[in-house]
Image (cartoon, rainbow, N blue to C red):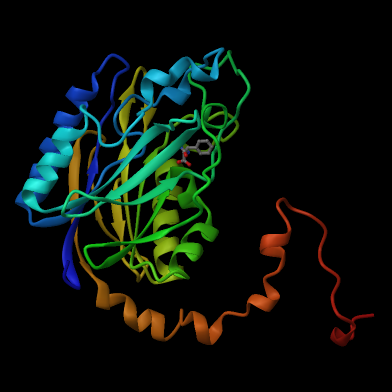
Length: 317
Ligand code: ING
């Protein structure tokens, strides 16, 4: 890919529990074709894109939702997407539930390059929600029950000559994620998400669900001088509403493209990799300005704790 290329985010409206992977993949292919028609060279699809967001349902057995997991990738149901992308020479990001041959379950995303090769894989590290059965709720958020914490770390991968970092949904709210990727020289961070309006134990005004989503993208992009592109699974799934807001943020921290609805919809932006350079040479010149010797707490402490002692040289009594 050139230093300038068009990137698309393909937002996927609700996927109902009874919808087949074939039906869903046909929707993804239709959006990929739209993206290609607009000149896109890379398309971002959402998190857990192939099925309904099954972590809203309790199952007495962890394996109770294995029908929503993929045992290999690609596979017969997803092949039409790989084939369409290959025929147009475009790459894509795809989120899905992964069941490994040795029985591990992950919330996973992959990067596929323009030759159809899977060149990157990520397994979600920030698993939100809960693991216990909150049966009084209409919709639960059981990612901590069905998925293990990812074991691949935060990786950056070469996709047709461009360095892509990946993350998934709740990861986008944690500044550490973008920093881990930008310290590895990611140019573009791509992610998929499913953000229900009602999440157990996390109530805020409805409009703030959209605001904090867009704020997270813009902040991550600005503070790390990277482009950030996010594609959501949105709209109503089995009576539960998930916000849309698929968007692309520039290294200046601006949302430069956003969908307008909560259904299947593609949004585009021209990514200019050189646009990051002025930020990287000045305000966010990591090598010149960062002081890791003062950041120890970031990796030593998990939760909120006591203030650190101030050195005597401060002269405080
Ligand atoms: N988390 C969603 C997100 O947008 C969420 C919603 C937030 C669920 C916090 C639970 C707790 O962050 C996902 N799906 O990762």
